[in-house]
Image (cartoon, rainbow, N blue to C red):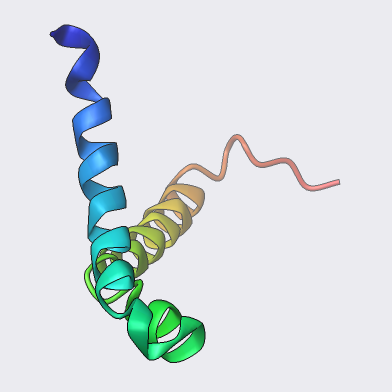
Length: 70
């Protein structure tokens, strides 16, 4: 059972993307699937990407000794 530690969050996140897309498939691929695909997972992706950028900038500011300018 220890192998499922990383599989369960990945499948749950994939389900949060696929479930709304399948539900609105009858409205078409652009307005239905494309419009509703990231309704649940979209804010999670935006928060994750922007927080990683902020942490990276903070790390770059406080760890300037390892950055060498050529």
